[in-house]
Image (cartoon, rainbow, N blue to C red; front, side, top):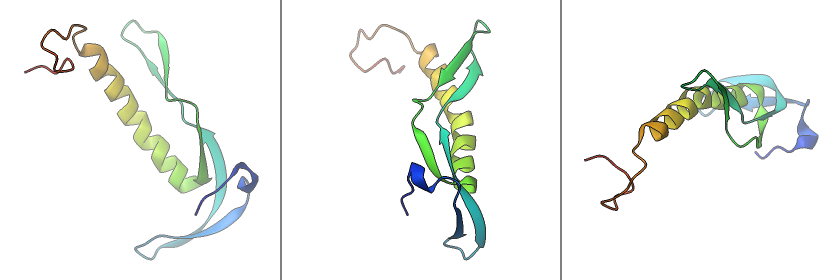
Length: 92
């Protein structure tokens, strides 16, 4: 189901495909993850788009993003800036 900002605060019954059913509340949370950079500066990752849906589902997305986005950022920072061989900077 698609939720909009007008749905925020409404209670819904969620039935997961394995059969678990629960009552949840629709929330809207921006996709931002804060982390400390290599020089101890605060970095905000994510684009701020609103995640709208049941609290449990939105919470799972944010939990995964809080692990994956900093790892992707740090991996990108460790890549060499030059791309002399044209492979996109991928080490061989």
